[in-house]
Length: 474
Image (cartoon, rainbow, N blue to C red; front, side, top):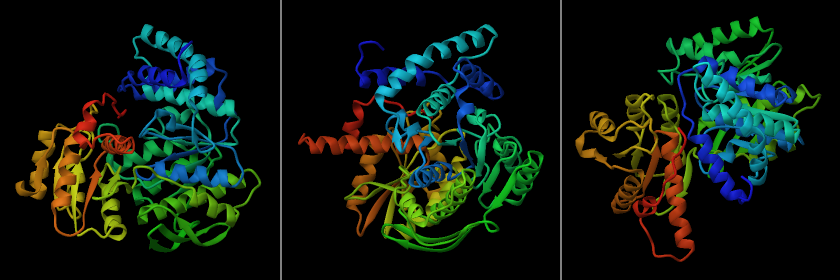
């Protein structure tokens, strides 16, 4: 990296990290991560962490927890995935992506250790460390170096076997659980809950959203084994009132310390109100462990500063293009419920792409009530469901006259915007089905916007996408 500019170094580091594939050796993830961190002095043991898992809402909840803790005067780290623009978004300090200069210094320190662990693993017949394992190591070192007061760590997948489970989360946060990643979780919701409850550490405070009964029983058993205390939605914390507004929603939340009335959450959808409730309860628990209390002014500031890119996010106007990262039936149901409340569209054209390990049929069925015409496509992810396969499933849901096929995301967006403009009444475009789809759509629209600002000749989205060689990590 010597002699490279910070931007060039970031591009090179990005390529080195994300050329590393995922693999099925899930049980060995933590061993490799722990080995690398041990060589680096076990920085994760210096961290006081809030560990967040669940099927839906964990990224938004993590972001709200971080903002709330920071508004109470704490220095914060935030580890989330995936990213939408730069992978430095995954490793944030005090609400900002890791600076390029810090990344360059960090990589020069960590890369030799990663190479050493790779060599040992390969010699034993194992794989290279995956990209997520490497990112986890980078995050732990970055947060320890920055001496953050608290690190909010979102799991990548599951819990007990996730690379992030090397941290001792003094607060374990469980957002709503549902069946997902059928090739990873065995045994339906029982397997999901068992895996995700694995983040509960000895003596932790567990803060949970409402869960299916089966999941609740499993969580209770895991907590009892680890002498962890439990705080449940509906018992220890509650959403008392909610009113939608153009700016998001105004909520009244009850936690153990009292009732917080008329709090503005600048995010749309009832699911975000539930996320806000869980985030506030988790923040309360984390503050208590430091001898601190929730402060109403800080709560207001923390929620006001909360963002959730890619969640019911408007990325363009005329026509309005809304992107949402819902990628399983549970998330799509929440999205569908929020669309009517948030936007007054008379009709909606959908752009949908799904990853092969997801419940594509369930996603399509969940979108049908709010999407009048669907354009199916596929992303650049190697895990993408082939467009022909997705189109056949979409025809079963919408019928052939309401389904259009596009070979690329750029082509799909061009078709959708043209169709929305041509329709009578206010017609919006909804982009949903996978996080990789949302990321590609955001980049394409941003490129068109940048070209317009630079006074270049107007280009369609398909033209904007022609020069793109970027791939969103799946």
